[in-house]
Image (cartoon, rainbow, N blue to C red; front, side, top):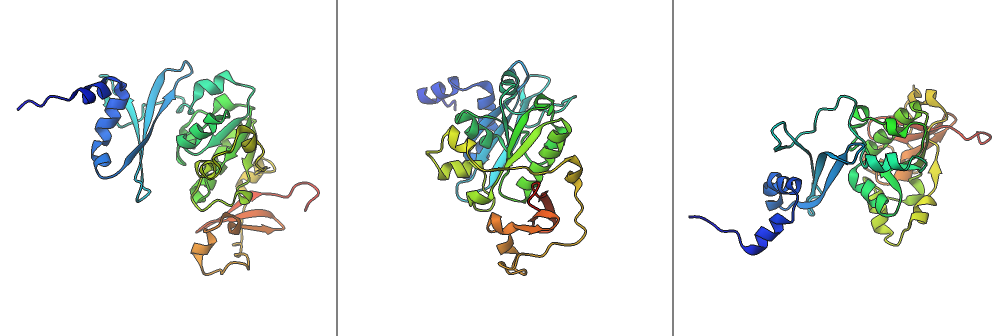
Amino acid sequence: MIQLACPNQIAESENKTPEQIAADRFTQRFVKTGFKKQALHVYQDAQGQPVYWRIRLKHPQTGEKWLRPLSRDVQGGFILKEPAFQNGKPLYQLPALLNNVNDTVWVVEGELCADKLTQLGLLATTSGGVDSVSVTDWSPLVKRKVVIWPDNDKAGLKYAHSVTSTLISLGCEVTWIDLVPLHLPAKSDCVDWLAAHPQASYQDVLGLSQITPFADENALSYPVEQPIEQPNTQPTSNKKNRRSVYSSLFKVTSQGVFFLAEEETFWVCGYAQGLK
């Protein structure tokens, strides 16, 4: 028996781009299990032409995320795979980065965060997730001023460190948003902060406290020879408490400021001159 699509279904399909139709096809079975569509992010080349897309779904009950790259194959069809890049993946919102070379660039982990900051009028970008830093072409940011807004978890700090190391090698001036005064829950990000502050403006974000993560490039591999003890205000045996509040994850010693992660310790920054 032939089933005819109703007029509304036809109109909906006609209003969608080919990549949106393809994304719907690939995600249909996940949507049926409760996942909700969040976005279809497009990565572009320097001329603004689409290179590939990132499908983003999230389950409202479990919080589970479903992220997949979407690109065209040699026959012109769609596949859940990134294209091959000879010189590294393009940064998200690359045309805007190239067209506003004198603006400060805000780097975040994930396209949704970049979109939210862009909506406020900031020049924002990302390479994607924590494993994307080394395979991305960061050259459009050479010698530029960059602010990194880390996610409030171990992976977020790892991403921020990796990006900082790369950008310092490119001659960039890098600062981080100081998460401690924001009092964010664990695993939250700039999207969560903006959701908690719906009236926040461009100027409000610019006014957030910033820190310098590294004194110089040699400090990027700062050795921590002995484990740093948990501050006395938190039980040392309770690992859940160690990552429940961001401010409790820091310890200040004569060597500088350290981030106490679940299984390892990261050096964050040294003392400002004259404060040691």
